Length: 219
Image 1 (cartoon, helix red, strand yellow):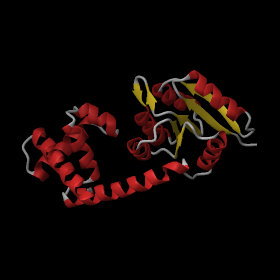
Image 2 (cartoon, rainbow, N blue to C red; image 1 turned 135 degrees about the horizontal axis):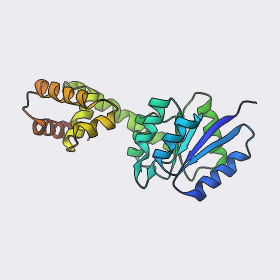
Image 3 (cartoon, rainbow, N blue to C red; image 1 turned 30 degrees about the vertical axis):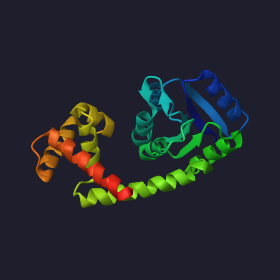
């Protein structure tokens, strides 16, 4: 009988223990490893190649979202976010990272088991109380794409502008987007030409103007 191999990633030992106890009662589930940090989760994924990673979003010294993105994109391993966060921005960030599912920690064991089986079968699974949130954010994403098109910038260029406005270096932006610093510099140079600005200050001003206009269209 084929087993679903699972890696647990959460900085609370007792929480991991409780989830492991639930999974050990399921004959087709096998917990192959546990991680206390997002970095450790990524390293164990490289080593163990589990079918699914059940991981929290928030860790004391690392960003679960970014490591989830690496696990999905670089290792092609499915991720189920299991967290206490129900805010819109957390849900949409994990969707962007490529997570196959999103559950809140007050979900029942039965729903957690159902989520694992659903994800393993090739589908997505989200807590029922998050469906409205996902719908609302999908509408916002659509409006964002429409607005970026109207302002003659692509969604990737918009990401670059956002990070520039946050005073991030080329290396930091490259790390966030999984591209090279040289590619970041090329994007910035192209944006300066396209938007007719002379420096990164001009790019940041353009981004803030864009956000102001976007807020106006959504209000």
